[in-house]
Amino acid sequence: MSSTKYILSDLHLGAGDALDDFRSDREFSLLLEKASRNRGAELILNGDTFDFVAVRLEKPTYKPLSRMGCTEEESLVKLERILEAHPLFFQSLREFIERGHRVILVPGNHDVDLFWPAVRERLLEVLGFPGPEGFHFESSGTYVSHGLYVEHGHQYYADNAFEDFRHPFIRDKKTGLLHLERCWGNCFVEYFVNHLFGERHSFVNNVRPIPNMILLGLQEEGWWFKLRCFLRLSLFLARVGLPPFKESKTLLERIREGRVDVGEYHRVKPSQLLRPWSKGKPKLSPASEPVEAVEEGEGEGEDSSPNEFCIDFLATRTDTLSAEARRILSEDQEVKVVVFGHDHRYFTNELSPVVGKERGKYYINTGTWIPMLFLTQDHRELGWKDLHNPKLYRRYLTYAVVKRGVRGLTASLKRLENIPS
Image (tube, rainbow, N blue to C red; front, side, top):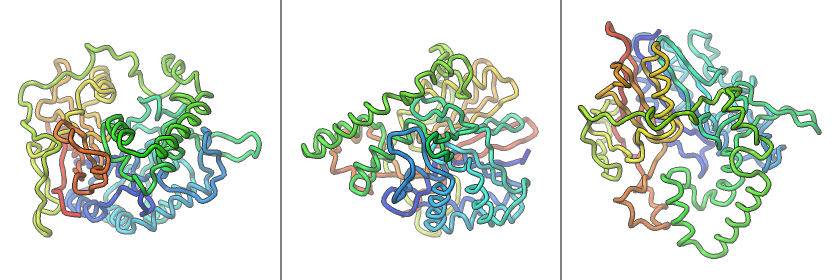
């Protein structure tokens, strides 16, 4: 195992248009420069690195209200647009590998297209065709190595779960073409969110909690927009159903029987949830408090202290991913560190890494690199039009660092200094 591992998730690289939320190519390059100072470092990109769902096709072959997604050729077209939009990102990855380091790519629900062989082959070409010592695609969806457990986390939610994430393909009985399987959430984003909001309200993927945002929109938008939303949502639910898909009604039953690799979150009891760490709890500022930006050239790529983090009050220890982390750390004595992503809310228990009665057990959610706005109490006066203001959004640029020392694994949540856009 590498002595130092850097773990990121939910970068959401798009095609450079209004639906592309990633604007941190330079910061990503700075992070890799910093990581390269370690000998034989590993970079683990933990799901939703590429946002294929946000890349629109002119004439897709698949139906909008269907579990069937892109063909291999269509996913390849989407990848080309992502490559064109983010040359510095991929150049930095290639240079990182050429310096003797390794990249681990774990797929998520937004970049399930990576399962296509042609897509991975094109990506390898851009990276200089590195061997297994330089690049690894984790097709199981779960990367486990010497006490470290890394998973994106989408499989623990019915709306984002795939029936067979290790082989997410469906064959069209009429045409014989092989398509990607789409989860309910991906279908909803493509049909409802991207179509109705698009360039007009492109911030919808950057605001949490989502119900609060929707309520603002329903209160302040015109009746024509409300009617369009109602009709389109009604059609979607009538044809597709609540999550998961109507044609996948047995998915939850299969989960309960252990026939689908999506964990056992439904069996977690309240007493098993990750409890708050009372001792040594950091005094963190609220999520809405502005983060001071450093001047260009000062502190770029430097880590900030965990006590300087703005914490999202929604990242409680009773959420689904925290409960699953608790289960894994409690049941598997060999696992010392669990890292998730997916829900865009960063969290760390590094100041008191205790699960049950066992110390040295770490859980980290690495959050996201896209601009986020959390509608906390400090933002309760915001209106729908205010959500268009880019100054309200923060890029937290968080990542996990896992190190192996003489006493075993240690894990911490780091952040690049918030550099002005």
